[in-house]
Image (cartoon, rainbow, N blue to C red; front, side, top):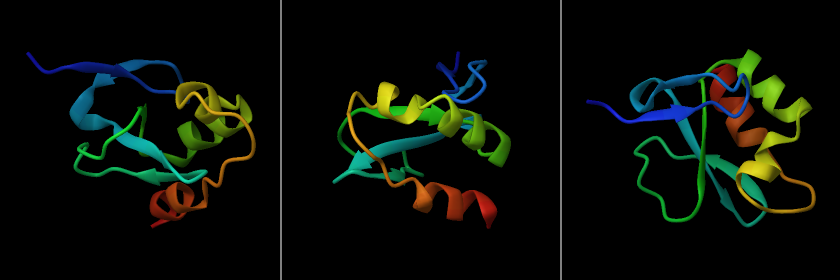
Length: 81
């Protein structure tokens, strides 16, 4: 049975393989394609819709347990292609 995670954007549960893991690196949110980077991670559907929801709800800071401004441009660029 595959592990299930919750998307921080839409808050729906999905298999881990269908979500994108993101981690915090020096106040920058970066994608973790291999899901192996150290540190606290958050899970997100790889769609711009879920990314926008997560940004609007300020879910990145809560999920990654940090305060202040976060740079999410790398995640957005990856989702844009």
